[in-house]
Image (cartoon, rainbow, N blue to C red; front, side, top):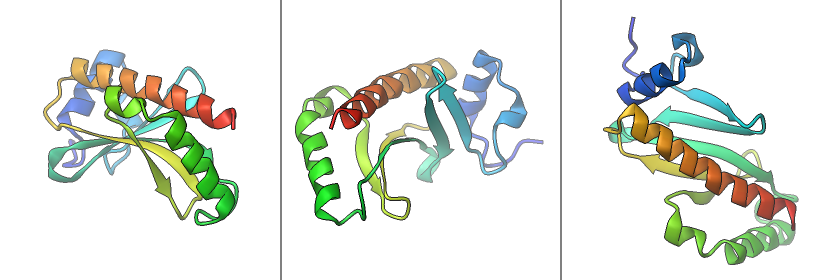
Length: 135
């Protein structure tokens, strides 16, 4: 039986990729592991949209600490050009002390379009993880 949280675009994507229906949680979240190293969460969002999120790196200390602020500032300076080419943005999960990458997607994407968006998101995630690891 289909849950209201199961988004059609995600179901189409899963069918294209041969993923079992049980891969989607009851709340509509689908977690993908890309290249054996990137965990990307795809969740239904408000207004029928979809949200992609992934952890980039833990912050060194509390989110408001000078060390954490310095890391965020250095990342933002390093990745200013990313804003021009990618729809994803860095955000902060204060509870987890984690820097994340997030992107909102239209709710009317086809499975093929969603696949392409996930690919672009993964490319951006690779950049941010690599940049974060070099600090």
